[in-house]
Image: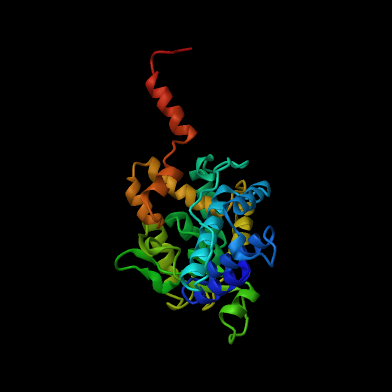
Length: 321
């Protein structure tokens, strides 16, 4: 059998077990392999030498180290399926490693975290207060909770518990292409690319306390709109992440705040918490990270202001001009 015949059978068998977005990713991975591996390539011919050549080509195509690692994981899953489920004999060993080349791009975790200042935060909030919109409401929620953009799109008023003062993050809104939906849900008409699903991981299903300012804003809306309405639209249908990003960009222009992408709201929330002395485990729990290590690697790096203050404190009274 060819590699892609096995890949397609593996994908077909697992499509009911994974999220729609994961299925879409595996289809994209298949197309990536198809750029380098011929369609009629026998799966038994993909030995260590040939596959290392494949991954060297991926590196030449400027694919990130992280994505190449994902591709290797998918390749191994397909090969194990061929062995255990299809009983194909004479399969080559998959117990080899790909040399990790340094990315030409910087490691995102080591890059300087971009964030908004608290003055810019106030200006954004003032824009919302002077001209409240559904998208603006979702943006303000993100500012004070650090939720992901898909989680902001999927947030309903029924997720707000004013008695306990918390927001339950239990769904995210994702975009699914027409061809993927046709495969996964052939009997459903394609109406829009927006689909609701469970959060990114088990730890992403979480409760986040509301600060008083946010609680007051949301309570005013909750008195008017029913529980099954979405915060970002004030309707019973969600918006997509692309649209919310566009609303966010317009909001920044009105506030005369330099553009940073939507995810920088999450960065700002996290770094502000860390710098104010909130322990990393608490911040990680609020952000819904799968592990504390992610939070530490991403956010536990002092800002220039903190560094400057530290140096000034250390040499106070010693060096004077």
